[in-house]
Length: 254
Ligand SMILES: Nc1ncnc2c1ncn2[C@@H]1O[C@H](COP(=O)(O)OP(=O)(O)O)[C@@H](O)[C@H]1O
Ligand SMILES: [Mg+2]
Image 1 (cartoon, rainbow, N blue to C red):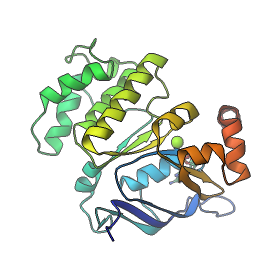
Image 2 (cartoon, rainbow, N blue to C red):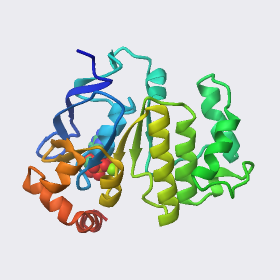
Image 3 (cartoon, rainbow, N blue to C red):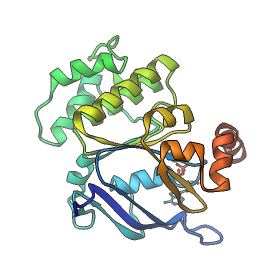
Image 4 (cartoon, rainbow, N blue to C red):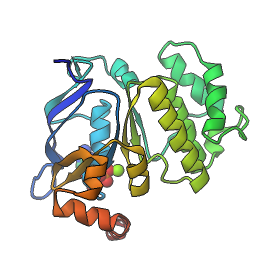
């Protein structure tokens, strides 16, 4: 049998705290071939933490991750991050221009700067109005999100870990980004693991859903099935009112 492209088993993340309960444990999944996966669940379940662990940006307390049958343990972190690329919700721009931000990625990974690809992708991400020489710090949140996404695409990762990357976009830009990512997935075979609270987006974009709850990966099913017949009461509740959940969490923690 073919080895899965991506596989992780029994991941556990401790965060200390009062009851000393782990943030999550026993998180296991396999991705056999290029896929688009929506990673869903109310705030505070550890979705961002899971993505950061997969990207090798944060330590895991138990378990292992294998990509193309190579374990994260013992891999060169820089090589790993090039293949499993995390795109943060709050995009951080490096000092300098948009172009310098894009070039830095190629420089760090000693690959030639693909200007043709940049020129092709800018309009697809709704960024063609921007001068490449513009100071990246002065961009709006939504522009930074898209520049940061473009910066990651330039690495041609096997897996893109997307953390609410369309959360601060207007509808038109959001739809552009969705279309660009769909095309990229089809053409490059890149797997997308996509955290979103936009259930319409999850339904339309993903082939399967990973639902986090009760400190673990509670459900892993085909998208259609997840939305039609969720297995747990928690998922049913989430599908019914994801935004209320999200907002009440934001209020209670601020
Ligand atoms: N290393 C850590 N130490 C302490 N708390 C952490 C750590 N990592 C994550 N957390 C906490 O765990 C919770 C869930 O994290 P997060 O991954 O951001 O969840 P989600 O993305 O699902 O909203 C947050 O309250 C966060 O503060
Ligand atoms: Mg998060």
